[in-house]
Amino acid sequence: MDKKVINKNYINSLRIYSINKNSTIFIDDNDLIKMPEIREDIKNSNLERSFLYDLDKNIEHIASISGEHYVLPKYSLYMSKIFPLNYKGYGMDFLKDYRKLSSLIEDNSYNFKDKIYLCKTLCDAIIKLEKYKIAYWDLHSDNILINDKNIKICDMDSIVSHKVSGYIEYKKTLMWSYKHLSLLLLSILYGIDDIEFLDVIKNNKDNKFIKDSKMFKRVIDNSYYMFYPDKYLDSFTEDYIEDTKLLLKR
Image 1 (cartoon, rainbow, N blue to C red):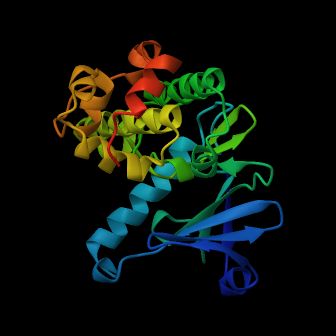
Image 2 (cartoon, rainbow, N blue to C red; image 1 turned 45 degrees about the horizontal axis):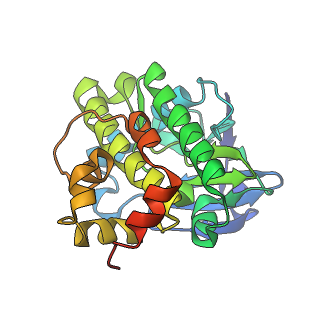
């Protein structure tokens, strides 16, 4: 992965693509540039230095992996000189022909067979990260991009790695990641936005089919334990989903 030194003139030349509370994303030709926002309460503190150091090392680590389903960092950006505490952001490919999974869930236009294919592909991509001892924690439908049946996971700085954060933080985040993966798979299968669907499941937690389903139970269970939702996908048939969807009170 390349490492580049930039200045304020470069930043001012970029066009803003999106802004959220944690970062700003800019457009630079065919690339997106993601720059983190530093919380006001940790600026100029040891927490800020630790945050930048870990982020820089995680970007370097995630860029070293391989896989067709990841939008990986192409280069890191630094102010003044290349040094972890001068980390400013990273660049990645701008996939203009892809849509966010959230918009496709809302459309609910995929047939059951295609939904199962997407779910299995997504499981394979997320679980493969274990090979690199990486846990992806920001797993939701806006961070999954779709073009037909092609899946890309973006926002790949949202990780905890064993190499940078140690075994305990990595393992805790891994279990958290698979819990969110379970919700995302159910959201795809039922055609309901994942944030909304979490509330729907909680509101229907006493329903028998939710109590009997290991995947539904994992979504609302706050305990930490390893759970691989791909092992339970085959229990969701098209008839089962149509029947149980009628039982959900929204």
